[in-house]
Each structure stands twice: as C-alpha cells, then as structure tokens.
Length: 268
Image 1 (cartoon, helix red, strand yellow):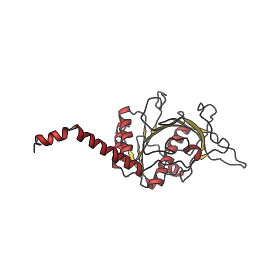
Image 2 (cartoon, one colour):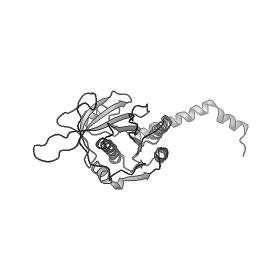
Image 3 (cartoon, helix red, strand yellow):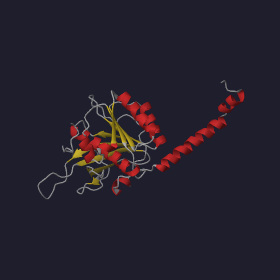
Image 4 (spheres, one colour):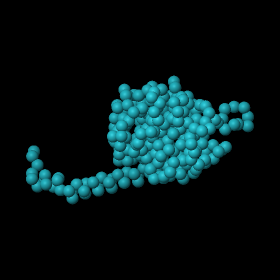
C-alpha cells in the first residue's frame, strides 16, 4: 500500500520527529531509574565513583600487564562485578568469549556461579561484539560480559547505547595483544575504565596463604577523577574489600611497587 501525501507529510514533520525523540528519551530515563547503579559495597570505593557504583552502562577493564596473574585478576574483577549485578537485579549473565580459557570454578569463587552464566563461544572479536549487542537488545539479562583484543569506536558506541537503552550493564575485558599495545590507550565511550594487577597478599599471623590482593586503578570515569585502591580479591558472594594494610590510597603511578602474586587460576 502506498502511503498518502498527508501521512508522508506527517512522517516528515520535524515536530513529530522531535516528539518521538522525546518519548524515546523518557523511556530510556525510565529504564535507567528501574535499574540504578550497583555499588561495590565498599564506602572507600563507592564514594569515589560518580554514580556511587557501577551504572547499567559500558564498563571496561584490562590487565595491568601481560602476566597471566594480571589477566586472571582482571577477569575475576569483571566476574565479581557481574555477580553483584545478578544479586542486585536478578537474571543471568551472558559471557561471550573467543578463547576457551575460562575456568568456571574460579568464577564461582569470585561470586558468579555456573548456573548464572550463559556462555557464547565466538569465532572472533567481530562475532563476539555482535553477540554482546544482541544480548543487550534482549534486555532480560543482569549483565553482558565480553573479552576482546580489538574493538572499534563504532562497536563501542553501540555497546554503550545498547546498555543505556536496555538497562543492562556491558562489561568488556580488553585483552592485551601480542604487539604489547596498551588495551586502554585508545579512546572509548565507556563510563568507567579499570586497570587490574596483582600485588602481594597481606601477611598472616600464622603460616598459610593470605587472600589475594589487587591494585585496582580507575583510570577514567565519566563525571569524576581517577583513583587507585589496593583491594582484596572477591569472595564467593562477589564482595571485594579494602586491604587492611593500606586502606584507601590516593591516585598514584600504578605498578610502581608491584610484585608477582597470583589470584585463583583461570586457565583450565
């Protein structure tokens, strides 16, 4: 059926287009209100975040170095963040990956049990990013997690818009490439960007292994300054904690005093 001239004119009316845009904006605000920011539950961390937690938006994290321990720490950091979204909002997590190196028991130790995760095995970064977009459009998930080595600005903008529109958090692990280029060097629309690395665990008054500790650097956030903390690795309830020996430390050059210390292994 061919539309009439009057209907075509109505569709082209700039006032109608503006009204539709306003309705879409109101719908997005409503979805954001339904799913507020999810706090870490640590005053020293949440007070430094512009949203007092992680908003349902795009967030990026990367390992501080190519060391396997740092890569594991960054993965577990996002697993704990996803676990907190599950506990706050309900639902499951879609985890898209192109490398089969995830270890489900380690994710469970960080607060993300296997029965709360749906895995998507992707062929490459392009397919992975497309799967993340589809997961965000679904709108019924607690969070969508992905691991990529390369992601263009157009892909990242679609993830950010998809997260804001659906109210589902998009958590993106930026993997190091063989070239050694910093995964967080390129610009990104992400609301927060994190760099995670291992530091020595606090000594115990008795023989044994202490809780793994990380240097967690918030290298960029929308609406707030960067900051760095020394945090204890998450427990099975996705709870991180400020390390007792250091407390809330001011922003500093990351990596200056780090030595090798490994969190739970991720490699199968």
